[in-house]
Length: 223
Ligand code: NI
Image (cartoon, rainbow, N blue to C red; front, side, top):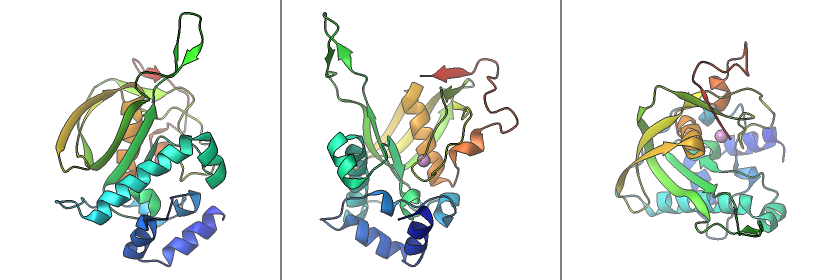
């Protein structure tokens, strides 16, 4: 399906219908579940989820994380036709709920002979976050080398996406526990991208369109 067809299809459904489809036991989220530019929820502020978490909201988070796993798996991504992703927000599924999933693989490690070996921890970050928000941040800015992409954006938008270099984020995990974490480097960038989605903000809102590759004083370029 084209992005326009997906947006048209999902705009016929109520949020409850969308969520029920997504959390059906046999359903695996794929690209046809992800709304694209032009769909209203990408530009709207999502509501906080309520606690204790409903089974529906727990399963939604699990399905979103499962999508990221599939998208990074060579066999499953090919089978389901997925673009690789490290983060997903419920706004991208047409739902105005503050639910995000993040899955950031660790870099491969090397043995003494220089052979690539699996890292001790497969993931740098693997989390389902409810009601996540940035509660404080560094003065220093940072941007990913080469710019950012988004599963809801079917085009390249070149330029540094200027974000905070370090953030403190508060959220509730899938067990209903309140968490406060400090993030830097790529995880900080990724989580800011996803929290932005829950507030109707797109990555290219942070690009200086007059000078997309400008490096302001002190801005960190993250590899
Ligand atoms: Ni995105």
